[in-house]
Image (cartoon, rainbow, N blue to C red):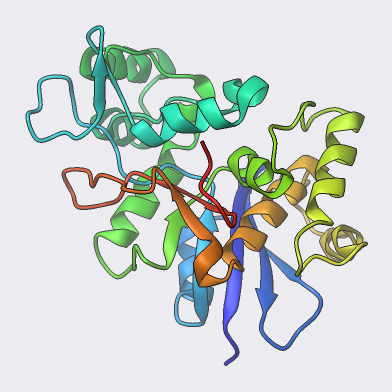
Length: 262
């Protein structure tokens, strides 16, 4: 089977995966209910799978082995802090990743207020509803990587960081606006594998499915997939020297660029 490069984004209760395959000029799309299904389909054939979900989690402010950055009684992942810096005005799109225990609590069905309070007790920070809502995916990815998965293939990415790297400068507009969609489409055209109109091809493939996938989520999945396509010398990590969490998983975000983001 030809090598594949996969970008996966959460959208409307499902995971949308855009795939570029060697020998093919047009990308394809799949939609899955669980992130584990992505690995079942692409784990053996993919060179990289870049997913917009935190990998590598904080423990607590009291943990001596936790590699997270501590300041003023709060801890955070270094990659989250750096991502906010490099994307400038779009920094609010990088939410605080939950601590491991808080993510597990949320995945077990706990109320949001209880999950946020638990995260606050562990890290000194509360948790956004968005972060709590994808805890099932966070836990599923972690369990996969600690069993049959491969952390060299399945890696974390953040779409706004990927777009920032493609563009060479921070984006100006929200992805939820018309100007933001145009800005991202224009940015994708600078990436070699992307052909003008590829997003329309994907949109046509999504027609008729029960899932309602937003255009912003399609563009995010494109950014992740095209990052996965990066040649070896353009595949970068933020930070360039990522720490590993207490389970041995790297705390990093992948992006594509000839130079390191600063």
